[in-house]
Length: 87
Length: 218
Image 1 (cartoon, one colour):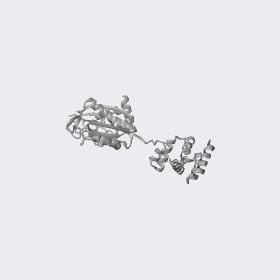
Image 2 (tube, chains in turn orange, yellow):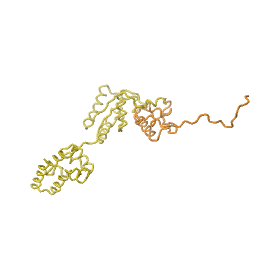
Image 3 (cartoon, one colour):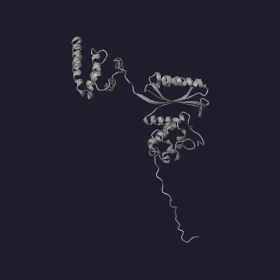
Image 4 (cartoon, chains in turn blue, red):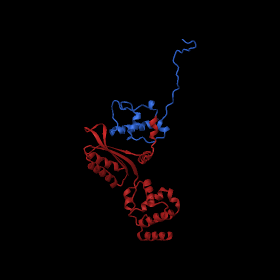
């Protein structure tokens, strides 16, 4: 055992948390196309469910637009309603 | 020129003695001052006098063409907005009322059973429906056969067709009826496009970057 080893009771947080941001605002994407399935898949999980804002970091305005687009895509059978292993 | 028209009006008034004639004459004079622009009452009276029945409809129409610095149809539009008068009156007056056209996008899934010719015939049918109703087609994009994410009417594939068009706001109801009647159309979706959507579609069509590529790295 090394002599100068410092021990902590609780593990310290090594990295600072990165603040989330709205990608649509940052990259100035104003329109979310329901036809662009590959794009929409970024906001879905494996089961084809929408990711929450707390994970995606979207602003409310664009989260709503994403959800609208996903729902349209589902209606037109571009995306499944329920599935396993979407990606 | 102005004097002549005023005289013409006077003569008509003397001849016909219509009740609204005097107000009409007064209006004709006040119209020459440019204050009429912001005065809804004078605008309204003017539209009243321009109605087809009015004896001096003709003279008023010519006056409007001469003195108003905006095209008459545009002014009429404004009058119509203020007074909410029935559109028929304006149509009768020989001035076509221009409705506002909106941008829409239509996506239809046809049955995969259709042959190429039938598929094209269906496209033509709906395109014609739009153009007949006074709309115009902006872009057409037949995706063709594509597998569905889930079966619709026990079919696992469908023929996709995307169409961007402009039409009056009351047109989509008619289109919807036709599409629902159609046996070949499995499903359809009509969306209104805002200005950003129009811009996006135009960029996508020309092959320019749409901005969504940036997200690919994230």
